[in-house]
Length: 117
Image (cartoon, rainbow, N blue to C red; front, side):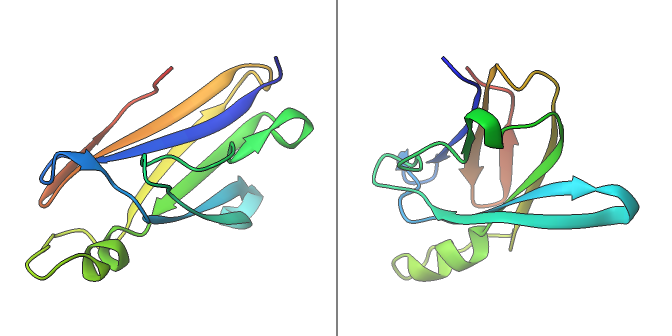
């Protein structure tokens, strides 16, 4: 199996996956430059339909996923308030053959993340 990068977003306030949440993936390059690698949206299960990166596209280096939490909350039913507009998560890919999973667990006024499996 080749390496891959995946994500999963859960909305703890609603007790369900964060369906339809937009996110952008960047590769961090020298001099503070971010190279945009793709725009994605979570499916009904709070995951993307395919890995964000896989195979030869997954290279060692520093990356950032920016979750569009504010835009997603604004599209939800009335009263879906929250504090964060965007949640940026920066991480390092050391082994391009490994599976890197970046979960995001959302609450209206906080969030948690970790390296998942």
